[in-house]
Structure formats: C-alpha cells, structure tokens
Image (cartoon, rainbow, N blue to C red):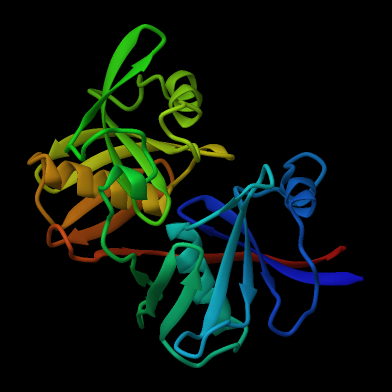
Length: 276
C-alpha cells in the first residue's frame, strides 16, 4: 500500500510525519529504521505518528520513533511540527490542541505568527522518574566516565536528559562523551545529553546528543532541560533563549512544580508517498 507522509523540521531537527487518522497502517520499528536511513530511505531524526486519541479529554495521540527504531516518550521540536501538521491537514481547526504522549498530556498552541508554544508540563527531578540511579535527589550529580568525573544535572522532560556545563560548545567533546553518557548504566533507559554554554543570565548555547539519533540540529526537550538546569543552579533567569545549531528557542520556567513553556518554529519541507 502507498502511505502519504510529510517531511518537516523544527530548527533543523527533522521528521517524517504520518497521518494515521485518515490512513490505516501498522507502523513497526523496522519501518522507522528503513525510512530513517539518510542514504537509502527518506532520512530523519524522528518519525512522528498522528493517531486518534484513546481518551475523551484529548484531541490526538502522538507517538515518536527514533531513526534507530526505538520508541521514545517525548520530542519538543516534533510537538511543534505535530501542531502545524494537524492544522495544515485540517485534522482540527483548534489552535490550542491537547495531545497524549507516552509521558502524559501536553498542550500545543499555534500562534498567529506561525510560532508554536508548547506547554511541556513540569520537569521531574526524582531519580526514579527520570530514570537515573541515585540514592537521593540532587541539583547535580557526579558521573564516572572513562576514569573522569563529570558533573551533570539529570532531569526528565517526559524523556531523560543529562545536562553538562561547558566553556565552549564548539570544542566540547559531544561525539565522544555523548554516546558514553547516553549508554551509561546509571541511565537504565539511556539518556539525551546536552552540552550547555551559558553566555549571560538570559542566553545560552547548546548542542545535544540525542539517544537513538546522535547529534541533532536542535532538541526541544533538550533546550527545556538545559534551561531548567541552568535556572535551578542559579546560572540563568527565566525567560531564556537557547541557541542551537539549527536556530533559537524561547524557554520560560517559573520554578519547581511549574510547567516549562517552549516557543519556536515548525516548517513543512515536502509531501511524499512511500510503499509500506
């Protein structure tokens, strides 16, 4: 069968988006691995599935597969593309959309200027909720990697994140430390790894090594986690601008127990069909 899809990106973090509301298909991890290959497939960081809701208080269900076929709980840049997609495809006329994910419900607000604001919900710091192996909750932790001790923050934004402060993201060992931290045994479900360079109280630079995808041009949940870590440790104040290789995101967080709000663009690249 032929399956319609849309290629989209949020700050260069790119996605294949499939409407499973008006189309019927059983998507498996092997499909994500095949389509995600940038040489022999369509090529993307994540595959996004738009599905009918399974509960009455939401508008859609949102599923995410990495290019390696692993299914993940959340993707912030993908959430913005999801909102733009369902409006463009006239699957809804709402500009405030409630969506269920593996990690809970999120709210997507499409502004008149085309920017999308996502209520990502409150960050989680309890080690068991991240998940991260630690006896007690702390603002930062020491992690032993190749006989060196790394100081990092561990946070869940619906998916697990480790945030490391660096002096210069251009020279940060993203491709060396990224996979080592991602697969560290203290992160039982692996982890996304953010390398954060604070510029001033309201602006920082960030590179992210995403689990199952490698370094990406941008990571929405990674930007949220980095902003939360920096605010929590007293390095920055909300609102925060996070500059990623693909562009900038605006992050607001009022403190523990409060939702993180992320605002940024979502862009449609092209439409296509593929054989399932």
